[in-house]
Amino acid sequence: GQQVMQIPQYQHVQEGEDFTTYCNSSTTLSNIQWYKQRPGGHPVFLIQLVKSGEVKKQKRLTFQFGEAKKNSSLHITATQTTDVGTYFCAGRGSGGSNYKLTFGKGTLLTVNP
Amino acid sequence: GAGVSQSPSNKVTEKGKDVELRCDPISGHTALYWYRQSLGQGLEFLIYFQGNSAPDKSGLPSDRFSAERTGGSVSTLTIQRTQQEDSAVYLCASSRDGPSYGYTFGSGTRLTVV
Image (cartoon, rainbow over all chains, first blue to last red):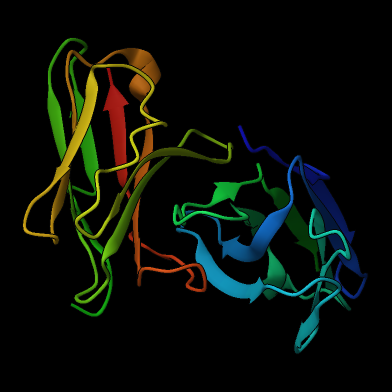
């Protein structure tokens, strides 16, 4: 079945440093989504990427979808303590009408003030 | 409601007992999903209800797990003869049906089997 791998598993940064998490799928995706889970909270939808090579920005967050639609990345510029949490990518397989997402294991980001 | 509601928020049960977890999705969301998250781990897919179609049960880990969705709205996840390895946070999510929608998650039910 479809697998989504995410690295790194953990990342600790000093406030102000940049952060990147990477996501790779074993199969071509129709789209990829990113979620953020604060400590003790539940995942919250951030964004969806659909097109090959797509780049989207949300303030200090930049999301990319690879040309082959099998990989994606999330980059945070100048991290803040409010960025702390686990970032998950989640992919939807191409074709068919089964819209369930396969989640990566997430990257836990901690930020030292 | 405004969000996805799950109950109970916490459940402690003895090994071997049955438990029922409830999810009330956002009104108008025809797709409903159950995931399981063990401590510090990712989200493990359990089951997916899509409108009136047969549910995708491919993620249920054993026949002790079952779920139903009544009237296209509220869903109940039942775990029979609970085991310690069933301890986890059970997350329900709903979405509009289609490939372009993100999930809205509930706050989860933390299940502890002792």
